[in-house]
Length: 305
Image (cartoon, rainbow, N blue to C red; front, side, top):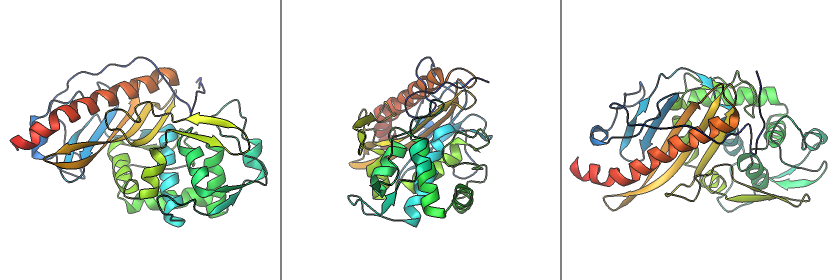
């Protein structure tokens, strides 16, 4: 099996198509909102997807909800657990974290996406979360796990406890960065997590960050989410690998009946088995099609409901 490293994790660009599918299926955790029946969403033809609107409900789920590798989407849970244990205001720097030698040595890996940190240097919690979520630094995810729990294994246990608490019954975390193909989940479960994480103002601010500079390294990284800043998109997280395919958790906003609504979506397992570049592009394309259709049709559908 060949993995191809790209910017921000095992990422992809290229290929993928979307067509209008049949009526969305109801997931076991939530009934589809009545207005979803009048929407004709371009659900991806492969993999799985799930979409919900704050205050309205589910717009449906597509594809068999069986656990699949999720690559760097794993870091959503890593950030969620860190912020639960070390809460911070939306505009605050948070706690101070000293980078260890291991994180520094892993900074320039040729086999995974990392972000440069210097051993012994102090970093704010916010900056490390940005370096983990914006360019998807695997070494930073592991550094934060060691800082929080004393070791990665202990932190993974916290991730699984958090998943259980959120009702993510089809999810298993075996690592903190997403490198392990044994970390598996479903679109429905990741949507549950996205809802919970986006309630945290600090998390929302971090995943909406367009670019981040690594202190002391003079390197600036752009967010791997190519949809950010377009069509109301305000987050959330990308992740791609050869076995996982392309994955994208996204958040956008849309005014419905005079109220700005948060719309959350998850697209998983696009073009799995191809290159990470091809899978990531397919996930972006499928997500863009869903977002465009929802923003165009949701207001009218709400008026009809």
